[in-house]
Amino acid sequence: MKAGASQATTMGFSTLDGLVMSTRCGAIDPGVLLHLLQERKLSPNELADLLYERSGLLGVSGISGNMQTLLASKDAAATRAVDLFVYRVGREIGSLAAAIGGLDTLVFTAGIGEHAPVIRQRICETVGWLGVALDKELNANNKELASTGDSRVDVLVIAVDAERAVAAELLNFEAG
Image (cartoon, rainbow, N blue to C red; front, side):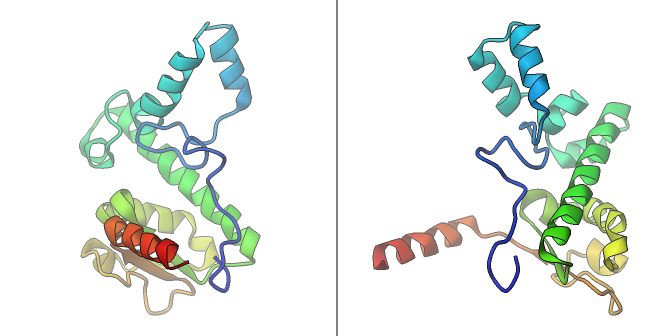
């Protein structure tokens, strides 16, 4: 966001695009889809099931789509899935920062953002070149402001309240 208005997003037409998620693939080369349809002979329904339900962290790890489960695992496939997630988030942050000409605040929210301090730390290390400096103690204790005092970028951990957001949207819709 820039001046309170959205400038860019990692999302696309559907919930499949963007970041790799628990069971959804995230951004994928269209050639993979063609291969699955033509060479592997998947039906459109089988392809949809694969992309929405059996890909993402689950598909990469073969273990789980749950980040806490993957972090607790000693399996190399779990490590690969976590590494992929951190890499993709770092890459997307770089892209979004380029789209808006810099970064002054980095916000972590929702499941992984709120509940995985080690992932926040790894992501912040990945984008340290943007001036992100995470305070390890504040981060470990899930404090709302988790950046160091000399960080050029504020790092926030904000709890999501989906029910409140939906209620606010409904009230705005009804008022309009």
